[in-house]
Image 1 (tube, rainbow, N blue to C red):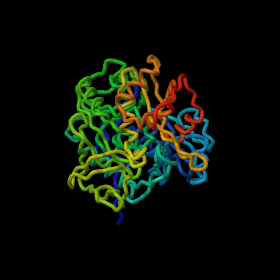
Image 2 (cartoon, helix red, strand yellow):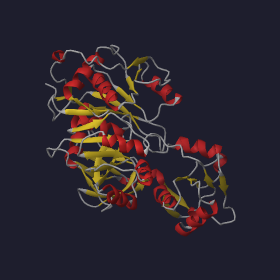
Image 3 (tube, one colour):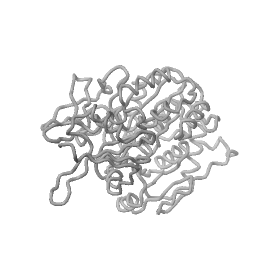
Image 4 (cartoon, rainbow, N blue to C red):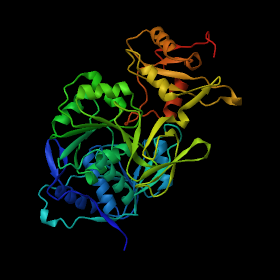
Length: 457
């Protein structure tokens, strides 16, 4: 007999699964909502679940799982990405709670009638552990997005391991607010699936602005968690809004600078844990960034060196080994150091650096609100690409930024040009897809543009 796992683990039907507008929603409410929505879904087809309300997204995912459907979780929903989805799944339909404009057959989310008879709820659904329930797509930050199938068992095991690592099964009823969308792998695991398999109640909200984050946190009960990204965390600290007491802060999607982690722990008076993982692997390691650079693997997960300097990850919740595209130094069988993504490493005039390091130097300049280095592809005929950088710093003279960079960087890595823009094209998780940066480079909608041709490469 095939192994089956429950839709919700570790919780009884009377436990709180989610919070919406300050009201608690219990597991039994969730199961009734799943049952109600499942009866309205088409008999067949892949599901593109774009619900903005995090609880509605979770109900939609639960209804899809219990009716044998596969959820599509792309990193973006541009017309081109939707066209690619149609090629992958011609029978895909969109489940939405808002006017999304997506060109797919649409199922409008409708809340269950609160007068529905609670006795109609059946037993807890169980799903085969080896059944594929989602295709999660890479972010496109270094290449075109690629789908990766996820089984119910691997997702549950990964999130349960994460919950144990974070101490979320200590008997206290934690609740979380997430600033990242549930359609992205990090938000999917650490907010939506965490409610199903992490013994944590999630907020239905997805706040973006610092004041909204603070307000959402006040509407849930302590002990509180904040699941966020470096970009959102930096904005939250810069706003100096009042944040209610937190027990834990999680960060992922981009490297977290040590100074930002230390400031966050000091200001928020809570431990900040950074999560390492990928779309291919799910989360596999954590570190307390304010205190250490060393990552600790989840139990059962192993790193093994591969030829040509690569490392592969095996064990734990992974159904098969995956080669990592990061530059990793194995410390021992439980720990490692991360030196950047392989695709982020650049070599200019025989000197090596990483885009992560360069970005940190840029954003650490006082008054710089955001920034990113970018190495374009080689031009026609193999012409040499020139390292450039975009910066958001409306209150600073461009020459001041240029001089600050000269103090921090080897001359080989000075950007040529340095482009001042109003905003960077970050997606909902704070990442900068390479295609978006390429488009920005082509348009160069600059407030100021400083080249550096007078300085030798």
